[in-house]
Length: 165
Image (cartoon, rainbow, N blue to C red; front, side):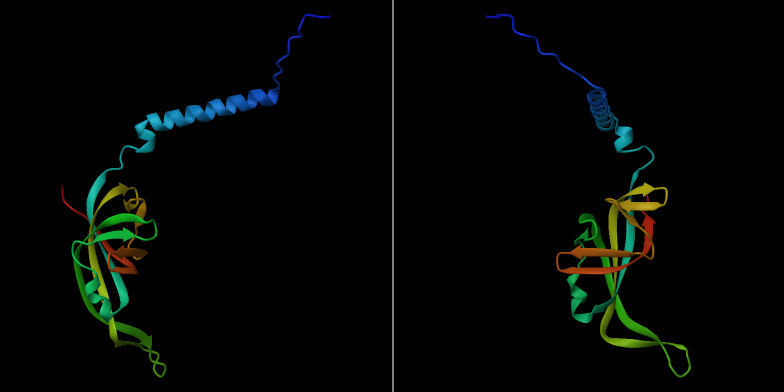
């Protein structure tokens, strides 16, 4: 009987070495990113207080009192908080069309419909192109979808201003 057990050889090929190197590189990058605050939150991006205006139009007249000062505003595109309502106003909504006989632009009062103007105060990150509220870039003229406790709607961002320090 042979009592000498044979030693098993451990073989390592080029693919094993490449996989080990890739895994170590990935771990190194993750450690660097999470330990280096300059990568996660780059310098130069400061948080500032802003006020921005969202104009919703047309809105049914019975919804006029559903948005209130003090309501927390949720941006439904990113499902994040995007500020607090500081003022609400409304006005008549006018439909603008074209007179088929003359070709002129004509505005007509649209009964039962209103325009709501909501001013929102928020903390934003100043970027090279403007302001970002919780990752949502505010762009004048672009749609903003908002939700407050009793109302959901989409309007246009009509102004953005930075508040003094």
